[in-house]
View 1 (spheres, helix red, strand yellow):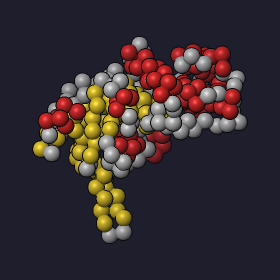
View 2 (tube, one colour):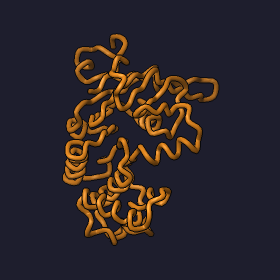
View 3 (tube, one colour):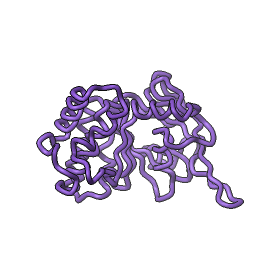
Length: 247
């Protein structure tokens, strides 16, 4: 169950409390996120929507340990990540977070297999164990027969499938998706969303996704709107009520 009122179950997979992010631009303070609360249970699928510059990507970066909040805390599966040291956070991120971006970020001189294998090179897995993990991940996304192809030999949809395979190859605790269909045509976008739904429904993955596309957001269990630093549930938005007050 997804909640934004800060009264979620203490056993929630992801707990965000009072999350604040402020940037300075010259002498001006830019308040991107303001005291956000969020609870996400294992197996939830939540979409974040909002206008450009509303802080959606900033929120994902904070949840993935890529950025540090100005105030507040984030706990994932019992680990409070806000104050982790750099090296510990790097290991935590490698173990618990899978990233899927709009731009595929594949290395063009590496095959699909080699691109998917990259996160595992930091682990203690043997070569044969890594191969098993990679082949399993590529099978999940339907590209096992394309493992020796280079990115230039794949369609955009297939490249995004490789990206998803790379994100799940280490069996992370949750997936962060930033506009995963933003660079795809509608048919390919539908195929990618069907795959993400399968990861949630069949494989029990927890997914947090930023999107500007209402059709993509509709595939999630819950849609949250982010505007002026505040999270708003879709049902509350329709009633004019925001988390912690009235719009």
